[in-house]
Length: 414
Image 1 (tube, rainbow, N blue to C red):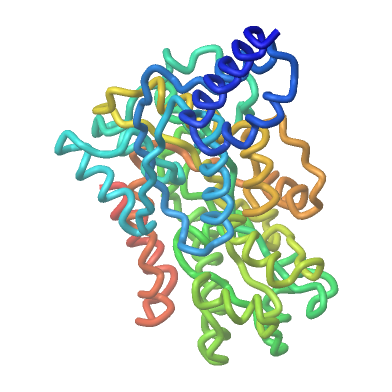
Image 2 (tube, rainbow, N blue to C red):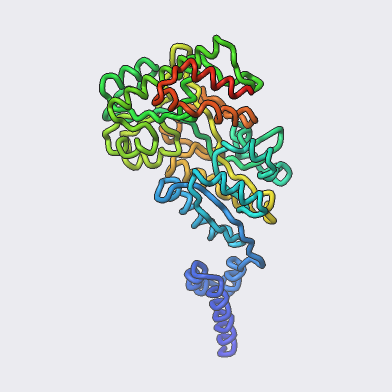
């Protein structure tokens, strides 16, 4: 009897040492395992056995320090360290204004991270420059949970260059205590502001894009060529003139004219509304709670607004020796649990279709996106950024909107 007892105690001691060697989480499970039958105790080390090889995956993101996005991502990565012991995820936060330049410079020099997450703003240019890895083959058969729309945002010339994470576009956020019903038309929005209600319009070639559709204007035709005829230029001019009117109201009242400057007034209840993308929803909801509402950018005399619909996703470095590992990490970061967390805590509209949408704000975003314009990954999109982003020439320098629009189309088609 004593001999058998000594054997049993020896087995338990060995098991306890093995568990302790595997790290703190496993060690906390040891007492429960030790009180079970010997068979269960001998199985415990196998369940927590360390991987034979730990692969390092370097990941960059541009979520602002302390933001809802950064906080949510930090929690997901903390869980990933537990759920993916075969990978060590090295994380670097890069300011959004620097992430594309830093990534492109480092990759061109033979370095860079294994992957990074960002909007698909530069996807086309980076593909053409050989700076993004084609993952068509290694991702084949793995994207059944991702919407076709989101996958389209990661594609160029029929090839897949990223794993989609979320959809985003500019919408109209408002404080229900200050605005009972959001403005449905451009005239209603202008009248609201003229009447003294502070609305923080974000001015810029990305945030303003939706108003082109409100006035019937087009930047691109179906083949992504610039629409340069006089009739269309007149409609684009009407949109620019309208936004200039809003700008002058904002300027006269010293109201914020950017999403960054408008954050405090809106969340503190001074501004009744703000135009911005859903990446800011987590911060807005944290401050306003149930008072937060969302609506599409107002429709105009020629139809609904058509804000640029972007797709955030994970992109992969052609220099990486760990592409398949990076893809597996990215798929973890976009799985049902992670996507649900980014939806609930940071306002992301998930690309993963297995996520259950119960939040009325998320549903409101999906409704607002219904008339959005899918941002094309074509070379002419770069020419749009290069020729239609200087609206300060109208707002501040006093250039006539018609002259500015004409110069924009001429510059884009050279």
